[in-house]
Length: 457
Image (cartoon, rainbow, N blue to C red; front, side, top):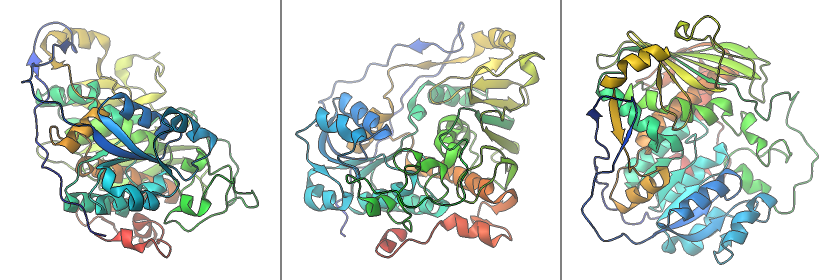
């Protein structure tokens, strides 16, 4: 396969004005007036995975008015969950196999959106970059640590624009966290607690192995659905929607929600990769599916004048994290999903996606409000940001060199969830110390015959 010609280089444009001003801690300012320029032609895109999350993402891309849909693709192309997109644009050609899509229509599009189960992100994204296409991939970036490593390498080699779909990474939390870090409001962070206490589809399951005997729906290409993974029998506990709870296919609650809760802290505190990962709690550990509740502890080394930082992850409906003393002795958790950030001087509370941080207690927030930076408005959202990155007028905010190391933290956490105990990790060599099984899991399952070519750059 010969990659297409390299895209135009991405130009880094400063997106907002940070200013110290009296008043509220977070206020929207008028957008900076830009010099008029001719509108860029619409970006020709193919959409791979058009049901459920892919359905919503496809509609959002189309609603930008900046995209021309060239093709739709889904392994369950005639399924009920893909019906809305098919009916929305019946004029758009449809394919069940992404490889056929590229063979027949590859010359007609410049970018692809990939919204498929975690285990399928990698081969499709690699295929696209091998063909010189810009790629937007849902989170987490890939299923295994090594797959993420290869995606980052291929993105660098191909020169295409890339974006992971942690949509809040273009929202107010991104701009606030950046401004507060640059202004020294967020500094000397020593501890982060992240939690996801919403129910998951696999909660309450009793699993002793992969189910067998269920007929494959006539609309599904089940062999293709398994992609590079050794295929397992079809089950309604796998498709649709329920694959995430299985180690063989998904990354659990951590891989699903970590990108929306820990993304800005990981980026602007430059956490990188941890030295130790410990499964402090595993409720109902199972060889096949994720625990019903988990607590994971990460230790990150000191870096660039910042102190060492420990990060805790809590998932499970009743696995509530300890609350900061700043909230008072009778405080209760008000958000099912969110975070607390502890620095040497201040404590912050935040939610997920674009939710902004608050300094706690509230009295401290009011006291500091006149000195806190404000952020501008008029920024592109995550989808428009990707389109403009493809067109060379913005830099993608969650490009693979940024979202890759973040996703590798989740992959390491999944290994701890699976094995239990404490794991020592070398962030330079990117290997576990003295644990053969953990190192095997870094690579993930060996690809089955016919899929090996994706696993080299």
